[in-house]
Image (cartoon, rainbow, N blue to C red):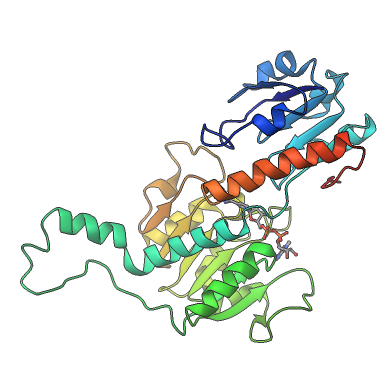
Length: 317
Ligand SMILES: NC(=O)c1ccc[n+]([C@@H]2O[C@H](COP(=O)([O-])OP(=O)(O)OC[C@H]3O[C@@H](n4cnc5c(N)ncnc54)[C@H](O)[C@@H]3O)[C@@H](O)[C@H]2O)c1
């Protein structure tokens, strides 16, 4: 089998092993592939492993040997799955490998907004504590989560993992989901979107990006939020009207934001959120703990092994 990995670097920047994949065929592994080199590198591939490379009908038409596309991600919007199906090319994804890692980063952002550990530490290192008149000082309001309300939009795998952690902090849970969820904790309250924005002290986004959820956070919804509230987004950047959020933060209409995703990644230098007040941004790292990437690698290999054995799993479409 001729296996080509087109953009392997973010999954395995060197701390994991490709050995198990290499046992399944002849492997060529590229860290990154610019769009104009996709066909040249993949033209002999029977198996393609990709993360964020776009495989549209145009590429599929020019890859006659291709039998299988293995995605190193849960989302599969980078592949034209209909064009793949028309050519009988199997497409697989990796569900739920990073749930706990994403939930953990949600709380890293929430706790950062509540206590600013890094900024206080930097202040101490600059000598501010040594010069302080009292035994303690703080540069930001300090916030206890106990009895505050967390609003979760999208109560799937990650939303529910976040809710479980929030309960341990004594938070009350509101949620909104499109599906009727039967097996959900009876203390979690299902409610409409606007009420979530109005009543929550922290709103966290865990729904997928769809035509309905694009810019779900807009000027109107931000205006419903408490001025003390925080917004967390580890889902997809396009869920937020970024200009509206930057304005809300700069005018103090909401108190802070913790974002792991932006509408364009990497962002342009003019993205208004890069300079917005009390806005903390991590570079799309929620999925990327070593444990989650190892799970991802294991499932990518197992998906391919099952396909080669004639019993495919995790097929999308
Ligand atoms: N930052 C990262 O590294 C990272 C990693 C993994 C996943 N993600 C993002 O997290 C999202 C959630 O992942 P998950 O594993 O929990 O997915 P999931 O499919 O288990 O849950 C998504 C939930 O959103 C609900 N939903 C769909 N449309 C909705 C709408 N219009 N309004 C409200 N709810 C809606 C679904 O019914 C489902 O319950 C993914 O779509 C992905 O964009 C980000």
